[in-house]
Length: 158
Image (cartoon, rainbow, N blue to C red; front, side, top):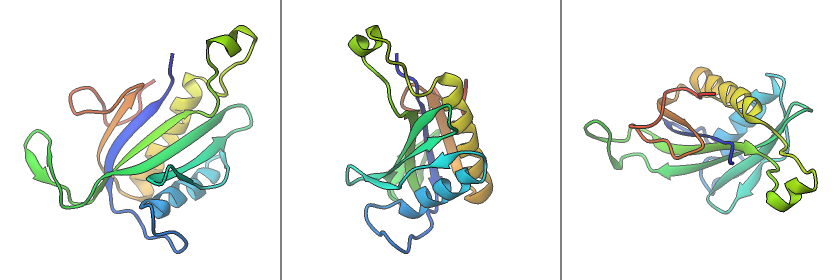
């Protein structure tokens, strides 16, 4: 069974001095740096599949991965409760255990690198950073699935 927290949101991503492509390096870097101040340690910021950014996060008990990519550009039309135009870019963020073994390796004793409470704790920290430091808009959070308006909430759920 998968364990993930998934979010869609709008935010004006800060520019990054080092990387301009793919988009989102500045946004990932804010999360990366701010998480360090909340008791998490972070690994290297990596280009994720040429469409976004990823980095590992740990508290020395749980090892997780955050992946971030732009899903829609500013100005695109999007259907919410009514059709509207995006004021900022829309982003998709996913938090998962860094290691999630399959059936065979679990039979031999391998375990996930993080459990549901760990994923939730990190998602809550990320939400606070997005809210307080970046003033994100229209957050949609969903556990173990794609966040849509009909089946998501405005904050992570356990």
